[in-house]
Amino acid sequence: MFSSSSYANTGGWITLFTNPSSEDVSTILGVRLQSTFDIGSFTFNRTNLTNYGDTIITADTTVTTFRAYSIAFKLAEDRLPPIFTAPKNATDIYQNTNVNFNTTWNDSVALAGYIFSINQTGVWVNSSYIEFNGKSNLSENISYIIADTKTNIGWMFYANDTSGNINQTDIFTFVVAGMVWNQTNITLPNLFTGNVRDSSALITSYGTNNNIQIACIGDCSVIKENFSDGTNLNDLESAVIGFNCSSVQEGNFSANFTLSSDGDITLTNLSISCNITERFPFWYNNLINDSAIYQGDTVRFNTTWNDTVSLNYSLFSTNISSLWLNDTRQQLNGKIDVSTNVSYINQTPGTRVGWRFYVNDSLGNTNQTDIFEYTVLGILWNQSTLSFGIVDINGVSNLNAKITSYGNNNNLQVSCAGNCSTIQDDFSDGTNLIDLDSIIVRFNCTSLNSGNYSNIK
Image 1 (spheres, one colour):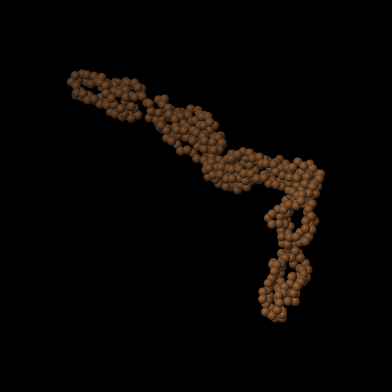
Image 2 (cartoon, helix red, strand yellow):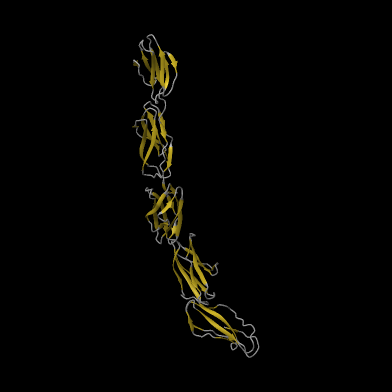
């Protein structure tokens, strides 16, 4: 038993002492310290001793006379800061959402409070100091994410204990999830009415984005995109989106295309604009004076041109075998004039012919009509010669040929010039055939006399 003692805070001395009676055979002096205390030093009967940690200090004495014994010990100061347990980083954190951040703390004595800090804009911003207690506790913060998609955000906690020791977590980071365009504006080059101007943009997914949607606001019938709504993309996957602008009307057109997903409800915007003007010189009244063009016909082609300045000249061009052939250019006058070409058609039936006009004006502006086509009409044999070879006298040899109709052909006639009594056909003159109909004509060769025979059909 200790007859008396003194108490001091960490860093101060505690003295325990006793005055045993003369009848005592032995006296034991002892003290047990909690494991959270650190004995920095102690003395027994003025002798300096050293001991640390959880311990029982004892002293055994045998006395026959009255003596006094004492133990004095000093507790070491608390110099250990709070220790944190690394949290799991949240995944797929999107802009304009609330996020819960937390970290677990442990201390050897007692926790006091914490501060949360986050960097969304390049500047660290601290929250208010929040008290907490105990040897183990949780620091928490709910923050609203204002940073744009693909921004790298840092965050951490500070904590202190009742002894004034301070610690901080590592800096943890995450990338704001969502969808982004690779650009914010596209201005298409000017184009003329009836033409098409194309462009493209890239979308990239940060984190997982499901059910991606692209919505259009504005001149959506003029400026269009080819994206398939409902597409899913994983982290850092991309997709190319095609756009086109086209209209038969003049004007300045624009449209906004917003990008979102199930997780990313913030509408990311891409603006596209295009300017469509009437092309000068522009053409109209593209005409042919013959609706059915046969081999041997003479056909007139013409187009009317209109301009804001004087027209200069036009050029007629045809394409028969994948090669464009230009005719002599024609002088034009005034702001309105007609390009004309008269051509003799010598191509065989079934030939497809493309044609168009080019034009320029006094300022050097050029234009061209669309490509127009026609098929030369008429009747055509499938071959130009037949040879029976050697035929016995009074024998008969037969061969076939086919004729095909391009366009409607009535009252067909097969005439003969040459040895028509020896080489004959079975065609019925006066037959009618419609477009692409065919008929087989049989020829036979027979004679009682030897000789070389031929004819032309």
